[in-house]
Every structure is written in C-alpha cells, then in structure tokens.
Image (tube, rainbow, N blue to C red):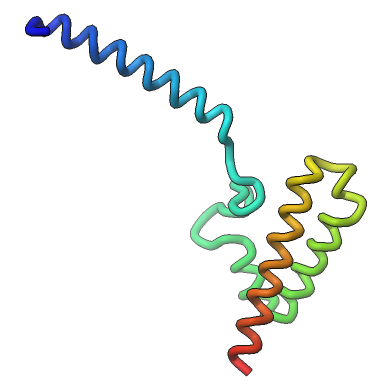
Length: 107
C-alpha cells in the first residue's frame, strides 16, 4: 500500500466498519437503569445524595424503605421489567444498609 489513495481507501473502510460496530454496541448495551439511571444523574450531584443532604440520614432511610416497598409491591409485576424492579429494590436496600452502617460508625 504505497499509494496514498490505497491508504485512504483502507482507512475509510476501517472507519466505516468501526462505526458500524459502535452503533451495534450502543443499541444493545444502553444505560444502566438500576445503578446509574440517566434521569437521576443530571448535573453535579446524584439525586440520592441530594435527598440524603436535604432529609438527613433518618429521612433518607425512610425514603429508601419506601422505594423498597414500591419496587417489591404491586409495581414489580405491573410496571416495567420485574427483574429490573427487583434490582432497584436491592439497590435501595443496599443504600439503607450503607446509611445504617455510617450512622452506627458515627454513634
């Protein structure tokens, strides 16, 4: 490939192939709707951190418990993907454990 046109052709084909692979991956992966849903990560602070700051740990615990109930209650099978809803409930339960452990450490 000593000719510039050959190199240009080679890179054009490689770029087109790489772009196709990226588009394919983008369509199959998607955002992490459990751990980092885009609608909860807008701006400089994540929503749960803002809630903890405003409601303090006690209020944030109540908030998380309410979400555990929400995602394991009737919503689990009536809205969205049941597996995703169960994972969201686990996420909020883990956040409750984290808050309780931090509270225990500071006592």
